Length: 494
Length: 141
Image 1 (cartoon, rainbow over the protein chains, first blue to last red):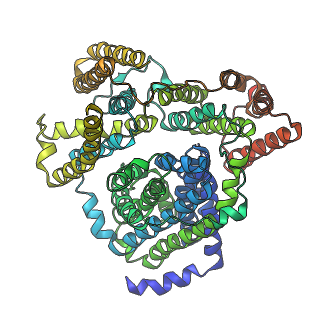
Image 2: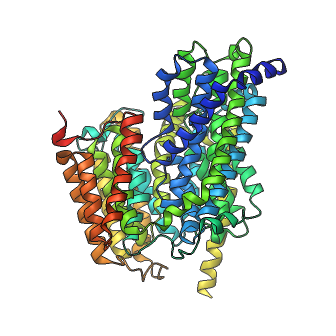
Image 3: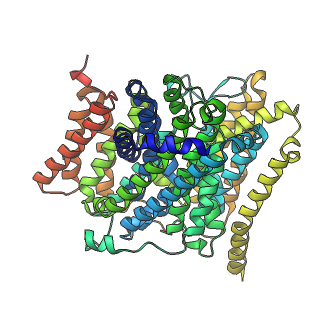
């Protein structure tokens, strides 16, 4: 490996490569911050552009978009409660309350540092341990995916602020909505009412935009500004300090992101929710989560950026993309005649290691940009709501439309927004609903395939070592929440 | 209000049960999964129905500003209806101007500036750079 380092570094010193990674990161941040525009879309659109470029320049451009896109989602999630990417949904739980308290700049700074360390950790893992970790990811079969989904669903307990019954109902409502569309095992169409638009199930992005963004703007109609205290200037926001005690949360989130990112199909969204759950359950001030605790932002952002390097591990070593962006990146590799596998690390070692090192540069670029621009981004919240509400609505509409170029998705988004508003007011958790919606298909597919493997015996979920490990972690994560609820109930009775 | 949500949950559970009951034999596994979800949803709804302890959200104000809330809902719906006819950009311009005014903002210059900025930004990122098609309405083919 070391023999490729010098050629890789000299390749990176090419101004064209440095320019492309910088441009890619900036484009990625903009794309990530805009709901409806995805890093997958941007990378896919860039593939024909990179065809005429030298391989390293093209790959550095796409890598920059990937890193920047994953980070950019946090900006709109924190400031407007409108996650630019699904992976940034968990960031809004504490990021938006921080914004409402006038700490939007600090929240973005926390997100920037957490994203940076998550990205750096996963890239180090990719650089040093890719082949070994790739084989570990192949040990995850359908039973493990099912238990991983259950572990993610256990976050419902964490996301529930008030009544546990309502939290669970929200999660199960999400699971029910996720059953709409084709059954993954038999191919039977369920609850589609013969509407072609529902054959693929409920499109996730319009639902997310509706539940998080539209419900929020409806609530904002009662206020004149998002932030009550408008005395903050750029200078005062710049002077705000990074909260202490985030390092262990960021470290845990980075590890979770890298591991979950390696698992094909799992993805950054699940990683962010699991990391959020870990952070809350292991925190002494767990009651402040959901009310503007910076640890919530750090946990979610370190995990989703940790997925970047993680998802590239099976891609570069085995040709199995960890998520949709990695799949689009695979197209970029193939168009350059680079077949993922051992040859990438031997015959094309200089180029591959150059690409991996360019990810470090992309992380540094968004760190500098993010830290410098955070106060300016935060000033968006001083815009009067009367202007902000129609602006967010327009972005929500185009964001929902752009995924499938379909007005049905726009109506779906509006419907989810209105229902989400009333559910949230009624004490239900839209976060838990989203979680059910994301994890439903993974849980159902893993459950069905595992039972086929075991000829119908559910013991398959309790016999495999990785399954047992995941069950133990899941139970450990749920214990503190249930113990807390039990204590509260006991106090009420007394 | 909890009772209303509980009844809604029970109704959904019954609908799911009836729907899954009509699945063909080849989708038996899918039906079992739905039965499971419907069962849990029914149990949770029943618990919510009989629960006597007041939840922390029992005194919530459902709509804090009925006037602004209604204006926003009506105009968002009208915006959705108008897009296929007027096209995305004219409908968005109209929507932004009317909603800002309706929410009590009385500075026409800033309304026009905000509208221009949003529409310009969407055009540049979505249409110009990324080539994402937007509804053109009567202006398209």
